[in-house]
Length: 198
Image (cartoon, rainbow, N blue to C red; front, side, top):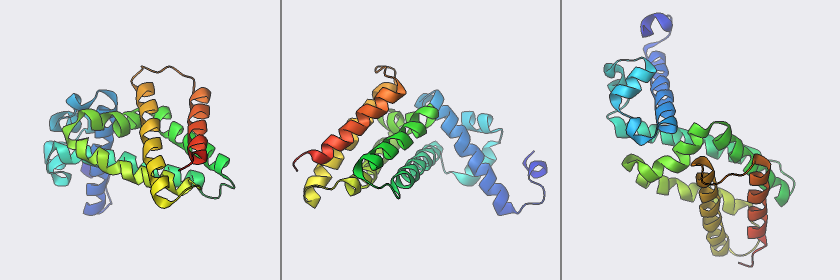
């Protein structure tokens, strides 16, 4: 079991590795089967760990779900920041940011479902989902060039809401659009938002 697999590592290393296994299992269940599928027992079965190891890292199911969500949220934030770094102009920033987000949430739809759908259905995430929105709105607002700070914030919050709903519709199957069209439409939204007189 875990002792044989990670022979020669420290106790802290083994704990960290088990925590990663549990978070990965939580991502798989939450992002594939939805909130109802995530229980302590199901996560342990998926991770092939005993409940004793679950409680070594998490107080309860809600804490694990929050950790899964925050992990995906941090991946999204890092992808967006990296995408716009060194972009020479607004169009390229928009194209790179949208492409990075599409890759994150569509290449691995589990991440998209955790980030965008799970906060709508899992009570453990309802408040946290709202908490992460300002983070993404701030990232978008930093890319806008027109208007004063309040105007940029207004546009950024509206833009994050619009883009989130497009991706939610795509992930839940109510919107059918090819990747190229999806990216082009979202890029146009971002560019037009920056042209909006705010």
